[in-house]
Image 1 (cartoon, protein in one colour):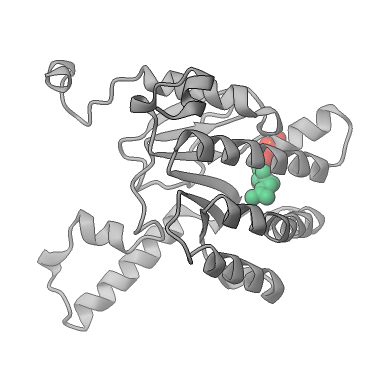
Image 2 (image 1 turned 45 degrees about the vertical axis):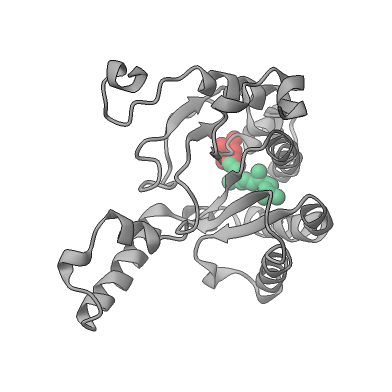
Length: 251
Ligand code: FPP
């Protein structure tokens, strides 16, 4: 029995293997306090810490966080550069902890717009955290858009077909999944969105076909351990049917 599951009253048997989160509400959290939006993002980084620590403690194997979408590049320049600075600080300050806790860092998204310095830090941290068998994988979706991801996969597969490596009949769900950024991860069991918005915002569209959803009004910087445990308990009570009937599932 995992001691932390016992401590938090969680049923280890009914934990999600993969949790994906849309971290929303940093801006509103800051605005309520008449603070600059970047302060909200900074507070959001603390919630990232809290949620990652909890996943590692209780044994959630994959945590995937939507930290910056392809559309977020259109935000005011000061906000974009502030966020890039925050990602840099995160990589520098958390590398040691990731290694100590045997957490593997993974980044999904299109890397072509990042400044060389940030890109270097990302690649270094990814490489450093690949040296051990991971106890958990933390994936940051950065400059990520699901339609773009699927388009890239389709282009790759079309090229394979055009080059005669595969026939069109070989294209199946498995091949498509294998050509997404998430090729080495199970699909999310649970998707959480904070801040009272009920949208998917171009996040993991292919991968969430059978995910359970949890929406909360809590703004991301306030989404700490207690809120996350509440979401996990709610998930534990769900009956996942994957298209079958309730009776079949109980079977
Ligand atoms: C959405 O809230 C949040 C983002 C676009 C950025 C998410 C970034 C963080 C949580 C910062 C830390 C992350 C890491 C990985 C260090 P919003 O700004 O759209 O909020 P609003 O809807 O209230 O304006």
